[in-house]
Image (cartoon, rainbow, N blue to C red; front, top):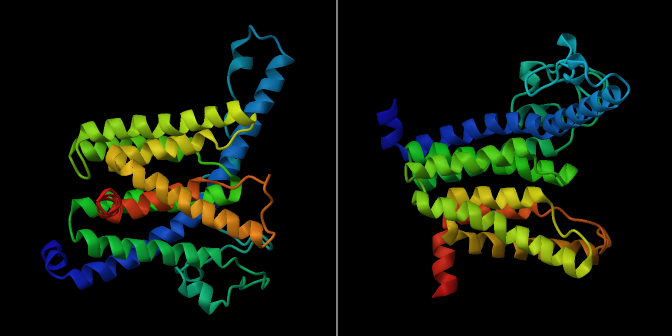
Length: 296
């Protein structure tokens, strides 16, 4: 089978698109549930701290954080997906990427409540970028690393759009995975990856503190530092320039457009993570070409 896929690029691209659709369906779960999981953990920690303040702090039992109740499990796998309006459990044939949404005409089969179009869009986007990556890199180990990075960037993009958060549970493993990939020289030399991770974090960290010093406001969040550090770990320090320039250009164009349409106030914060992710994805494919074009 591997020989067939290695020799037939069209078949490999088609199967990659199907695989991307399935991954996109899982990414929808990550985007929806991970922020809720974080909120639940924060609430439990706050309740634990409040309870600890009211009891004897010398008692080890009071210092132990509460465990999740067995019947109250909520993670990326349980409980099963259900309609948020009527609680209807989604059957497997109602969860086929893109197709089920089209067949159901974007509505729940039980209560006819609207299902956001973003679900099939995330699935289609993931399928498309996986297929493009398969065509660009061909059959091999490299494309598996590329899929891992692209899937993570898609999840981070939509989480940041929804919550203005870039979870450490995604960004920090992404840093180490990038260093691991480049330990084997997948995208760049390990030395370039280490410098890229440091330069990515420190560059935005310095900009953040300079902006805060001059204006008294926070221009971005710490999650942006970690995301750029992750991109530096994957792509190396040389491609940080096109990543940041593309992200800044896209963010500026979209921000100005939203303000002109009266959909974004000047004082209203806008997430920067999605544009970093977009700049990282473009640089992953064509960063060297863009860099050579800019620098002559």
